[in-house]
Image 1 (cartoon, rainbow, N blue to C red):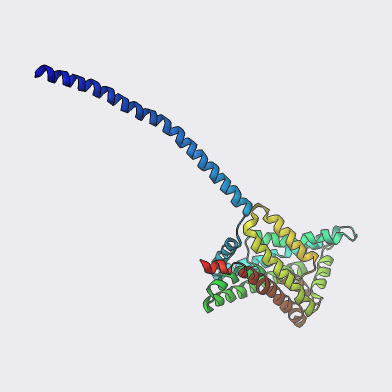
Image 2 (cartoon, one colour):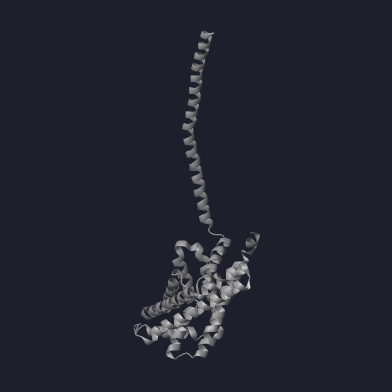
Length: 313
């Protein structure tokens, strides 16, 4: 019994050792295979992610996503403190004067040839570039940005917040416009050669009459709203986007309430434009045209193309 038991134990230990070594060998082999399989799987996943990213980049943002970006921005604007809105609006009113100043400089120094008009209007983009890229409060941007949240919520509270922001920003823009116009008129801040061009541009902008000012304000409102709509997708081309479309406002001889307020203020400070004519013949008609173009036309079209997708969610 002792010999047989010893032999059995010896055989069991030998065969057990060999079988255990075989199992361990298989496990080691599998472990050696797994890193390769995992690396191949990771590479395939990376390629799929890169392909998906390329497809998404080519497709761009869907209208629903653009709508959501602008809506959230509008909600943030309506939640900002009153003092912040006032100072940002005043800054925008001051800086938009670069549009008048830039156009006047080009008009002063460009040769008097037919195509100089098109080059001259590039100066009009300067103020808009400063204001929009500087994230200042410009009234005509708010005709779409703050309207989209109201289209979603449709409450008197949200409508009241929108009107509050409109009133604060518009008043601040006008204050800034009159302040910088006073600088132009009452100080030697501008060279004597440039001031005649500023006055000439101001007479042209405010001398169209109420009806023409109103109708030409509509395309300007649409164009500014279009700039806001395209900004989330523009990324690195924002500069060219703003420059091209604001150049179109000047080249098309359209009217913009904030840039035009600088020109209106110049003539008011000089005594060449009375209050009644300034308000009734220029300010209110242009304001109405910009609101209709930016809100009643463009914003409603933007809302129409996404409303079913939003309701489906």
